[in-house]
Length: 232
Image 1: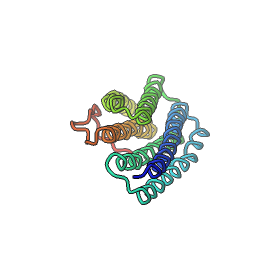
Image 2: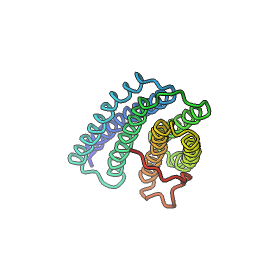
Image 3: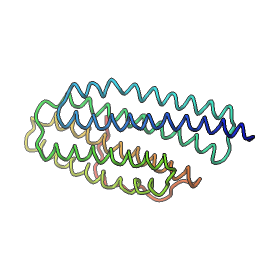
Image 4: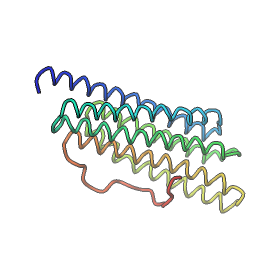
């Protein structure tokens, strides 16, 4: 590449990172609001989360279009090409996080009764933990720090363990009072959505490692989810 081409490529890459930063900020906000809506049974806030999901979808399309155009114009190689591939992958994970936040918000309308304090605290804690991990991995991407990304990768165990605890608690409520089965099922899927957000955060961490080192992160993912519930 000539100096002019490198400058143009850097500008294109900077534009991609700006789009991803906006996407990440929206995903964090959507997750926080969805958690709040579900734990407080706030239908109005849930509707806002559902409506705003389109903003994340639109940004993902922008990232994809910009990435494809950059590859076509600059024909990058090696590390430069990894930058673009990783940007597309991260955008996909952020879009899925947005979808899971929206799905969690939708559950709010099915929860008609006040939640037990212990359960409400657990759901709120799970949401905060998922938010913290997402923020940490986005910071690691912005800094190009594979070490910080690896720390997030290992931290997913804590989110899995918390999900398993909530899962068991909700099953107990359903066995004790069959009238709560419908509500608890929606809460189960809401909690599972948060656990899945942790998995997408882990995906991002793995892609940061690939970006920095040019190799796939080896070893089995840390998992402490002992359930087999699949989100709807």
